[in-house]
Length: 192
Figure 1: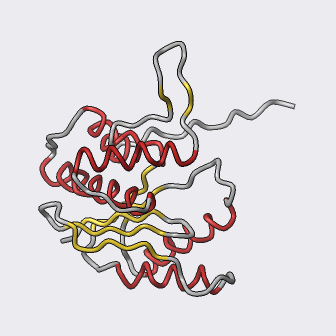
Figure 2: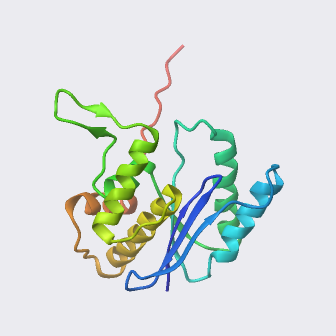
């Protein structure tokens, strides 16, 4: 069994770990050419070439503030549909939960004077946390996010199989949120 993390993007991060957490596959996939839809289709095909039937998969959920929402949505949904067609199950993890899993928030500073991290600074903090916690580093934030998701996959598997996971509280909270999602609130309809 492999534990796989996928960070769908124009440069998709793909990481597969063995049952001991050792890295088996590390890839940043881009597809062929620069023109869509060919690039997107070949990127999705490339992801699917790396997935195996017994993989335990975690994929990053959609970010709501993306400047490339339509393009990333196409890639993300394309990967999900391809997994579905192959009968492969996956868990989805919200982008903020990926950061939370390694103890990172979107903020820096002391209470009362906190500043929101932006762009590359936010990505660097996440990459530094992965290096510090796991001793893993790759020069792509997409791959680093995929690595976190592969680690999440390992703990999800342990939680499902044994009911017990030894991990810091913030990681247990992420696992619990995935396994026991809160029901979405129904929108109230106003009477006319």
